[in-house]
Image 1 (cartoon, rainbow, N blue to C red):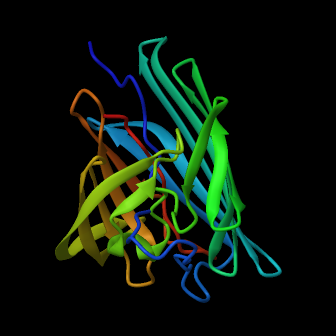
Image 2 (cartoon, one colour):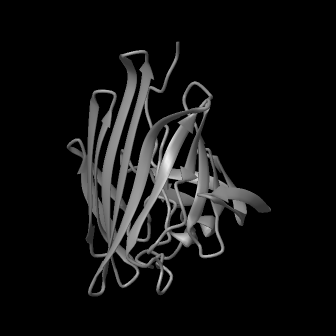
Length: 234
C-alpha cells in the first residue's frame, strides 16, 4: 500500500517584482484569531490544520500547525507534523521558520531578511532567495497573482501557474458559501477556494500516491480570516 513519501504545507505564490519589492499583506487582513481545518483522505479524517494570526504593533505573526496521521487498525502507516512561523513587518516577510517531521525525516528551515534578500538554511544547507518572495501558505490573498512561492518544508522556490475557475458553492463549516476557485499548476499542484473575505475556505492537494487530500474549514472563523499551508513533494 503506497502512501506519501513527503508532504506539503499550503500555502502563497509570487509575481516577479524588482529585487527588494514587497508582496504586501492587504491592509487590515487578516484580523487576529485562529482558523482551523479538518484534513480528509478517501472519506476518512486523518488530521488537522490550524493557522493562527497575531498582531503585535506593526508586526503580523502567522503560525501554521499541521498534524497528519494515517492509521490501519492500531498501526501508524504515515505521520506528518509541521510547525511554521511567518513574521511580517510593513508588508515584508522578515523572518520564516519551519520544523517538519515527515514520517521520521526531520526538516528545519530558517530564513531571515538581510537587506533585499532572504538568507538562511534548510538542515544546514544554505538558502538565498529574493527578498520579495512569500511562503507557500495560501492565506495571503496575493497568492492568486503570483508565479513563484517558497516551498514551506524545504525553503526552496517553486514555480506555478494560477488558473481562475470562477465562483463555486463550497461547504464552510455548517454553511454553504460562494467561493472563488483557483487551480495551481506547475511544480506544485493544488486547488484552493477563497471566500468573499479573502480567507481560504477549502483546499485540495494530491498525495504522492495520487489520492486527493481535502482541507475543509471546521466552521466560520470567529475572529480571523486566513488560510492553510501544505506541500507534497514531487
